Length: 110
Length: 116
Image 1 (tube, one colour):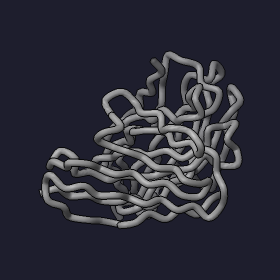
Image 2 (tube, chains in turn brown, blue):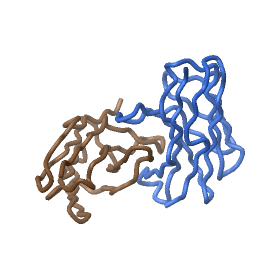
Image 3 (cartoon, helix red, strand yellow):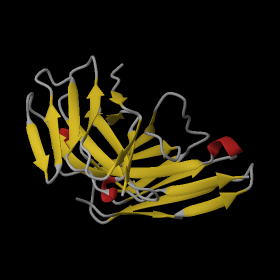
């Protein structure tokens, strides 16, 4: 069974701080996605990484896929209150489905 | 990306009743998924609904409790039957995106269900 361990589960920081969220597994994934969800809305896809060692940047967000394609990280530089939300990593399953981590609830205080 | 709408957006229901949630997509998609989510927590897959075949349910979810219809490539419904307070949750539908090879999914806004 493929599992994704996501940490930390909760993160409360001040505006301007940096943070990193981790997503780890003992299984290899063909792809891995990061989603952000705000209250009352569905998750929104931020990025997909598919190549081991791949690094993608989306403004202040940096996503990295581990060389062995078993882990990933999301780094946010100079966090802003608008970054507040639930961050979810998800790995591609063999049936076209997604396997989700437990999520990281981020709160950025002004 | 696809635009996905869900109806109703929220509902409050009495125990023992049933609620049908609709999911409409603005383009034809092969795979549709139904999830359950407790507020602030991760998503749990209920079932995968492919047009022209019966839905595939995950462990812990059964067709009698969560019947699903998929009459065409743009529409699906999930019914929560004989509801109890434990069914109170957010129900989300999603679709497999153009990059299906990468398992990308796009989500509807969710239906917030409260069972009294």
